[in-house]
Image 1 (spheres, rainbow, N blue to C red):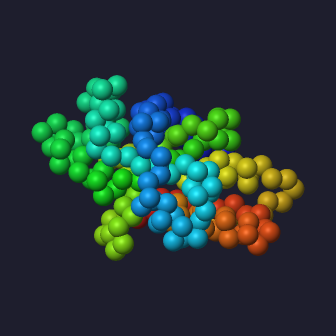
Image 2: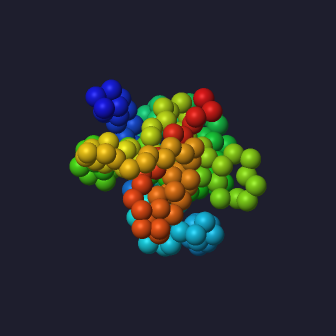
Length: 190
């Protein structure tokens, strides 16, 4: 736990503020996200609870008013080559869903520690994008902390490959009256 905590704290000091600002500038879920979420069997209240929202090129342009270009490039939200900015921003047209990774238990707040972007297009070749050059964080770390602190014996811990799988496992168990914890180790292909 100490190594995990130190790792998350170090990561937080690098880009957490920028990811939080991007999330704060993002929009409430649109109809496309709500329909996609419902097609997975999830409710709108669940969508609100997990905090998925919409980000656009305009959202990133607003962020550029608050942070200098080099800082946003270091955080992986824009290209280091400013000449490629418009091309780079086009990815937010397809990967327009922002998935927040919270730090609830560790820091006793619901701050956004990390983000990934999701393309909802059916058959999309690349479903998820992370900020370029970023280090993946555990999705559901807040739930992992809660699971690890369960005494005397915790329930099963499910480790999935994506955020939606983690949510599906947790919600399916809940509907069956069971309590389980599910996390996602994203970016596992690396």
